[in-house]
Length: 378
Ligand code: ATP
Ligand code: MG
Image (cartoon, rainbow, N blue to C red; front, side, top):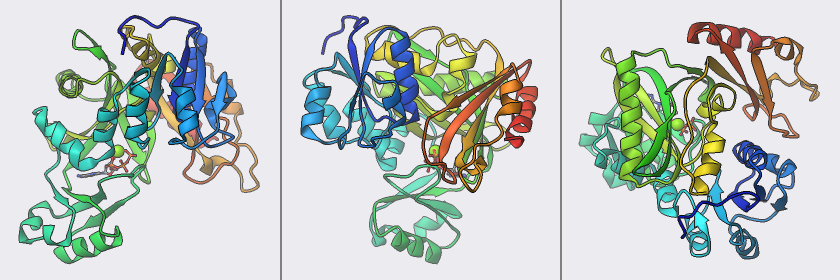
């Protein structure tokens, strides 16, 4: 649409009102903008801070028409209907583009783009029908059969060792499009968040080192405990991918660190701020959410500098008591270098992301140690 800066108090719109939408809304409100959130959940975490909550389905025509009145629209999740985004783009500024969101929704397309940017993925093959499974598939075993769409937090994944297991896994996924990915010699996982307005205006945050528990992100440690040259390479790779997609907005690029040589392999991308970038609120010059606001408003991304080593710890519903009683917040709240963020979700279910906290420290090792200790006291 237009390339002129969008200034406060313009109304900004967001598809999705979960925790990412909530932190976006807080950032936008602080910067003087107004916010309209579209989310079918009457208790959507972002609604508490938004000026307007359109409580409707994501493809609700009336709601989309109202959202189209906003000066600019963005999204907090990739499983939004790309067609809804393309519809909005005919009326207002939309970032990221529906095309980029559609790519991130589908692992087969996503991997093709990663390769097109000249970057490595784990060896893989698309499995869309039973006949795609042949003797050649053994090249990718042992591997993981992942559904091409709608996977998150390790859901939609089955580990397979033999052709028989592969066929059974394909059937268990219901015969939907899948990718078979060879297991790589994983030494660690990192992610890089890119903030891109155009080819001349792009910034990357320091890579975060990600530690998962039960397939869910548990801790992000920054700076990542990897050699400087590998970190630099990770930033360049993420930027190259954003350039290849001509991406506008905040893009998270997840990478595997493979083998003795720390080879970087791109796992997947998320066309939005990312859980592994939550520390940017407390530990960086500008947060990933401020960057999202800035870019959708045609403003160049701000300084991404890391101001302190830190560790972000996710708080899952698991730490609530059986009867719904709150965790013991006191040790965390008493620590002057830790910052609690709660998402205002009503029901604490196992595995549900309820909040996070960021602990600042002198170096990454001590931030992680202290964070794990405080988490254990919840
Ligand atoms: P999330 O929502 O956390 O990003 P997801 O459902 O999108 O999860 P992936 O990121 O594809 O799933 O994989 C989940 C985890 O499984 C990875 O973070 C990694 O630990 C492991 N994993 C995935 N693919 C491979 C692989 N090819 N080799 C080794 N480990 C893998
Ligand atoms: Mg992932």
